[in-house]
Each structure stands twice: as C-alpha cells, then as structure tokens.
Length: 161
Image (tube, rainbow, N blue to C red; front, side):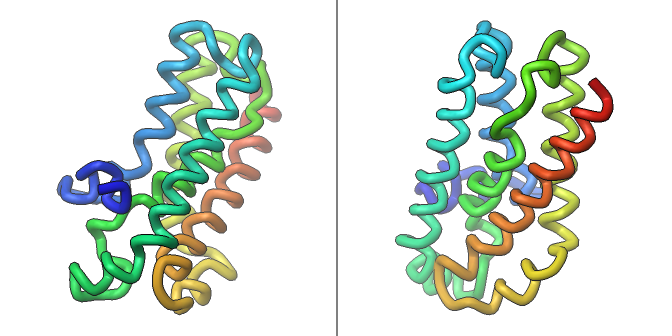
C-alpha cells in the first residue's frame, strides 16, 4: 500500500504526477492553517522529512516485491519514489516564499513543476542510477530529481521574492 502511495499509483493518466501530490498538498494545508515555514519551521519541514523517510523506506523494503508483482523494473504503479522525491523540493523554503497566498501558490507550483520536469528528464546521474537493482533503483533517480528540484526552487523563489 505504501509503495503505491495508498493507491495513487493506480490513478491514470500520469501516476507519477498523482504520487507527487501528497507532499505539495500537505505543505499547502500546513500553510493554510498557519503552520508555514515562517510560523512553524520545525513542523513544516518535519512533515516533509516524514514523507521523505516513510516513502523512501517503502521503496527500499517493498521494491523487489513490487517489481515481481507488477512484472517489470520500476513499475508505473509504484509512486512512493515520487512522493519521497517531491518532498525534497519543499524542504527549507524561505519564509518569504510562502508569505502570502500568491507567493505560497506560486512557490508550491514551482516546486511541483520543477520536480515533475526533472523526474521526467532524469538529468545526470539519475538516469544511469535507475539500473541499480530493486527498491534502491526505483528510488535513487527520484531523490536526485528531488535534490535538483530543491535547488531550482530555492534559486527561483529567492530571486522572485
């Protein structure tokens, strides 16, 4: 269940996009109830760290079984890797990035789009690391995309705001 991010991996089209949404939605909800990075830094980033750890562990622990079950390497139904990778792009955002509704929505959209784009194009060394067997092979390319997306998001929002 965790490996498919509670069934989001079965959503069509673009299951990876659906699997990327939970960290973004959580960040938006936290901001909406007054727990953005300027009010509750530890809670805001802690939720993203929880996504990262829980769904990374799911990939590593359940990856081999998922590949056997779905009959292919890195099956599209497995989206825990996208959930983990997306969380990286939302960590340690500057308070100004979510200072008002327009900035918050823009920042969350930038982080989401940056991760999806980088997950799809898989810049070096992500593409090559997909060959790692099992759960680590499922996960590692998305963590690299998440790190690149975090860098892009930080640069963009710090330049904009």
